[in-house]
Each structure stands twice: as C-alpha cells, then as structure tokens.
Image (tube, rainbow, N blue to C red; front, side):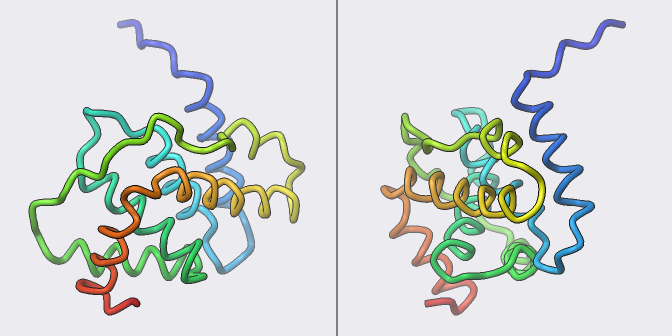
Length: 144
C-alpha cells in the first residue's frame, strides 16, 4: 500500500515539532507552533473547533503574554464545555511568516523569537475574528 507523500511544509512542521518538544523551556513553545500552523493551514474542511482553539491560543499568547503551557491549560478548560463552535472567517493572507521561515532561523534564541513572530503574524492576519475570540476568552475563561 502506497502512502501519499507528505507536503514539504508538513515535514517542516514535524521538524519544528521535534525542536519544540525537546526544548528545555518550561514555557512549552510547542503549543505556539501548533496553534500558528493550524490557523495558517486551515481551510473549509477544517473543523471550526480547531480554528477557534488555534486563534484563542494565538490571542492569549500574543496579546495576553500567556506561555504555551498556560494556553494548553486554557484549551483544556474550554474543551470541558461541549458546544457548537462558530467558524471564524478564513483570511486569504495568513501572515507573512511561514513554517519554513521559522525552521530556517538558527536553533536557540533566534528560532524561539521567530516562533513568537510567526504567532504575531498569523494572529494579525485573522484580525476580522479578533472580536469573537476576545469575547470567547472573556466569557469562557474570564480573560479580559
């Protein structure tokens, strides 16, 4: 049985995942790359919950300075409440920074900063969804 080839950017995401999962920082950078990648690669077949959680993670990280570990806890708290998730509008432009830019940065402080910049870039691209995400964070998590 032949498996279809993995797209190049997905391979780069896997490489970046190895980096973040092995990262010694307690901040848990892995959550940030998961959220940035999910929001950037979302399409009409992506579950609304996936997009909402990714955008919530980006909002909490970029605007509220949450660590990846804090974002992960917020995701777990939100997941306890089963609900119908809204579908944020998918912008045509998903940010100037992509996974290949992040992997191209040298490991260490430069790559870690690029991960943050990637999150900022993707979050800004979803500006049309900001109000809904901020309201969700306020109502469900008490974050304002």
